[in-house]
Amino acid sequence: MLKSLAMALVLVSTGGGAHAQRAADALDWSACPDDKIGMTCADLQVPVDWKDPGGRKITLKLGRLAATGTSEGVALVAYGGPGAPGVALTESQSSWWTDLRKRMDIVTWDTRGYGVQFRGLGTGLPCLWTRTPIPEFPRDDADLGRLSDTNRGQAEVCRQADPALFANMSSADHARDVEAIRKALGGAKLNYYGASYAGFYGQAYARLFPDQVRAMVLDGTWNHSPADWNHELEEMAKGNEQFLTRFFDWCATNGCKSIRGTWRALVARADRTPVPATKNVAYTGRDLQAFAIASARQGKTAWPALAQAIRKAHAGDASAFVPARGARYPDQATGVTECTDWPRPADRKELDATVARLRQAAPNAGTAGTIATGTLQCIGWPAPVTNPPAPLPKTLPPLLGAGAWGESDAVARAIDQVPGSVTIIHDGPGHTLYGVNPCARDHINRYLTDKVLPPKNTTC
Image (cartoon, rainbow, N blue to C red; front, side):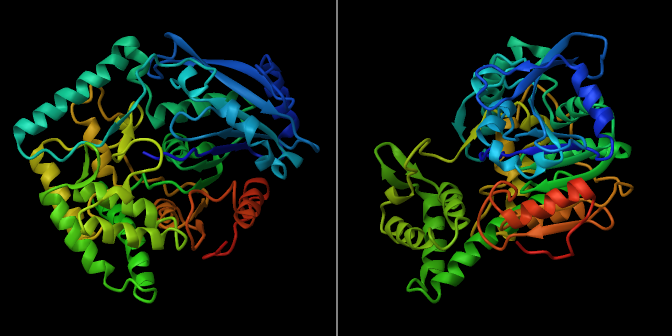
């Protein structure tokens, strides 16, 4: 799961502005709660269970910023997470959309289930949303059983509060909500920009409604569309390995040439006996790998401190790895959406085989930071995987991807299935490009409004 707040942008195709405007006006728009920027809101009712369209309804809260020029259509902005509040974040990040608003209305929505605890204004799932340390891999079947029971017990608190909504929180359910919003805003074909976890919504939409896609951007997201999920897990691990390889290569000419060997020895020892960090905290090799990957992906500004932390931990003190804020162990959020999107191991044999493959593929990074560790919380989950990964239809129009280190590779693996697609590359650290990289933002806006793709191998 992705901690950074992310965004998705859906654009009702240009050229149908008047029609889209009339449909949008059919919604009951009024000033948003506590509005400070001229934003209006409306409610849209959708089925809690899309397999039962005539059954119980839930509310999606929509927000709208009017175009500053002549409107040619509607752009629908959502923020990933999953669970980031679309209305609140669009208000705080309204400057991101300055150029796009010259031609488009900007509309956002608060995604299903993520209510008041996420500052969302739509129907929320009454849940004990929390973050918990990522568990260790089970050593035997008894360990696996205890993990399964622990996960089920935590999930039942959320499920029993609203069983129907709990069971319908996958990215495919969010994608069906997007289709309802598209229709409510006029029904023109969709242009979609999805960053981070919201890219999963986009990939699900492309599979469910390929004939309704005009253009789609995936920015800084993972590939949820491989034909072989086990191979994709290995590619994730290799991406994390590349973060550490960049750091080791930098060390080779910056006074820490021996750090690669020190690191391997540290991880091996920590896997046998966790290294003390602070009172009641000691780190395993996988813990250290997770923290080191997070530091290495920040680039050169973080690398000197990482080298120092590794040396200190090798001497028996891992305190330099303790995060300054938040949890002291690598952790994960309550996986209500994630556990319906991500395949989980059926038994310990399958889990052990996955761990062995990833450790072989990434000897320095191991399994840390991959969905293989994220799905540990999904073992025993009282809801099935309802939105499994699957390839994208080749009949889609050419797609546009974007991303920083590692992310652009993952995005390309998804969209290269679709002929003519292009990925914008940022050869540096970061997470998603649209909000922080003017070069990428210009290319994305041009593609969404005029359907013009940048050249292959464009670097921003």
